[in-house]
Length: 310
Image 1 (tube, helix red, strand yellow):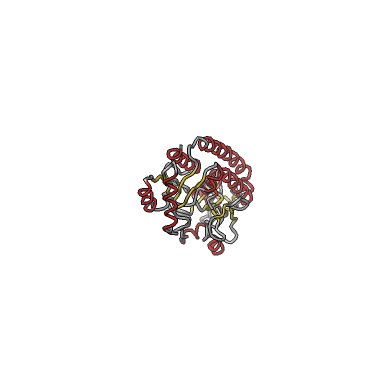
Image 2 (cartoon, one colour; image 1 turned 90 degrees about the horizontal axis):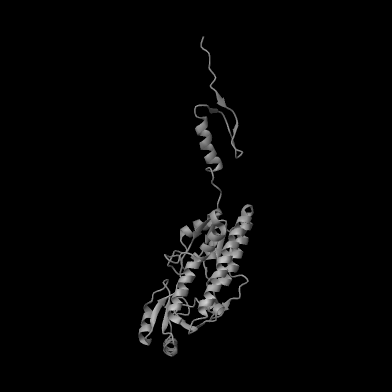
């Protein structure tokens, strides 16, 4: 008479992360335990990331510095694009829907953000970096200058806001976020002192720009934006305004127009030719080779300014 042989196995194995599985045959048990541990608990050494989206490259850099390995940061604005003309794509909505924290400048820069968040992820923790900042108001009712990150001292307040948001969203790693932020703040403080020292040696303190991005930087370091060619995105300068720009260039010691890689230099080139000036590029956004990080970008801009104004 044949006899049933009971196959050896495991009943109710409990994995180290707390999940339990049913009967496993001994021949497959080791491999299955490893596989299930990976699937149910995550791969060995893996840790859950705090998902963050940032509107512009400097904010993405701040988020990575504060978050370290504990965060996964997605940059929404492509390098080389202008935040003033950015149009969100379906991918933008998808990224926001998966994230836990959204870091934005505010002050009207991300004009698309509120509706997009309401439609894709109303519960996301939003860091509005302009809150509490002494904003500069430009021409036109209700218009504010959003380029606050170009002042390294304001950038330090932004880093603190990001650290607080990360600690709120992920309290288990708050000590790491605080430590990373403190280290980064020391570097930003050193950057501020470096810029202050070099700007103090400039022989001229005023300059012409294509786009009104440098008001906060100038306020911080005692410089003056004497004129702006395009006072608003896509706003063509009037003949009277162009006449003033030309007059300012001709009287100034530094005959230079600071344009930006995010915009065409065609108009700046034409004005410079008329005034016997030259065009140099300042980059307020970064994210590109040689100026990927915030500190690299600011040192690049400082070097360009030194060439023209020292």
